[in-house]
Image 1 (tube, rainbow, N blue to C red):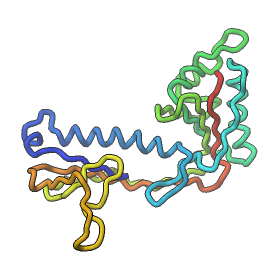
Image 2 (cartoon, rainbow, N blue to C red):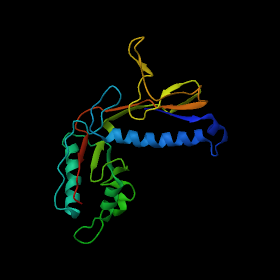
Image 3 (cartoon, helix red, strand yellow):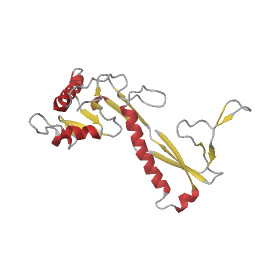
Image 4 (cartoon, rainbow, N blue to C red):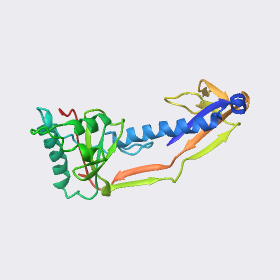
Length: 225
């Protein structure tokens, strides 16, 4: 995971609080959201990212009808999918905050809230719960964490340069120039940190993950409860 941003030396010398400290925190906040989003998606592995944990895993159809019965049926279906392949090591639920609240407020036929105390303590059916706003509302994921392999640097590495030249493009930053000598095409807009008396802040966080076997992830979407 890599991020670069730039700022002028003028603001670096006069800002309170210090601009570099603010930008480091913003980069870390945005990186957390970006990594969570990639982690739970269904996109295949490529040269620049790992596969999302839902890649190649078909969704289990959510139970119709809503209410407590639909909730219980969906939970049972997800646990059953992992139990069928003996992937019952360290199970973890991943859900949107809306689903956490709805589970807490779902009543059974007797008017009780069977899951309220447990879900409010980040547990469900005895398994851990991870809540993230990057999970689409209406989606519920169950993963066997024992089958998740993660390679990650201990801490992100930050570097500052006043000599770099950057292509200021958020979506698809390019090489500064491309093509053969004499006919090179320059990226635009390009800024020299030295020429403009600016600074570039770069963060690099080594990161990769993979599921060591198939069948260790189950998920559903568009739940009716």
